[in-house]
Length: 364
Ligand code: VGL
Ligand code: ZN
Image (cartoon, rainbow, N blue to C red; front, side):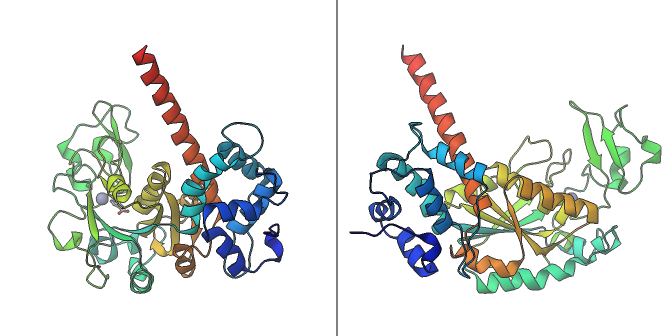
């Protein structure tokens, strides 16, 4: 007979063996009273086996989060998880938490931000973007990501964000600063339908110039994928997923899905501009998202703090790069990411139910 599972007294190796074995054995191990269901307490033990690292640390899901996750997978609403519900839970949640599929997004590590026209050493935080190279290269050297992406800020010469282009467009009457007074780093509003808010930057990352090349010391892996953004002269694009008005997407999400990516690690320049926007979009696109604090440099300290807070508030995690190896290998499993995945699965299930409802109504 399988003894009941006692996560606190088992070694990490034992726990992981239980989680990585087949589905029925896993169910049986956690169904301590052997009644054929997992109740909330049995599920709590399962979660304490799931959310831990290989240094023996057990992470706690908040009580309300444990409840939420339990309810999401208890689709029959009878306060217990049967084997059918567990099948879904196993395939869509546990398996993925134990064996994530990981991509790294290296955002805009381009000459202009490091030592060119938008050198962020001249910005309020006075950070040196050159410092991202060593930790990012080290990650790329030592960790086998399932996919590696590099984004390029890739502007045409008449781009809306360039201070020296303000004369090319009309300002909207709601602009807080009139056209003849606009200065570097001001936020203005251009005419348009709807009007477009835009921060004014020095001319930077113009397509096919030295300034838009990746820094020569950045390691670029074979088989990596390049993403170009900010190519439309009329709209800026901080995120590597979407332009700022969410009109066009770069196909990054589709490329990630095509490769079965579950986890997205985000790093690069500028922390509080393109890196932050990319991390937020990664989260809202349903990817478990990890922001690599020591692999980013930014423009403004307060905005860097806000970026981290927003990522954490949306159940992403912010870590230093020395945590990545264990996380990629599924040996450091964060509850925030598990919680967010459960919420995402709930959304998917609801969309599916609605979709089926619509089909049934059509058939009638
Ligand atoms: C960026 C300002 C303007 C960035 C791009 O890559 O963070 N910042 N364009
Ligand atoms: Zn730009």
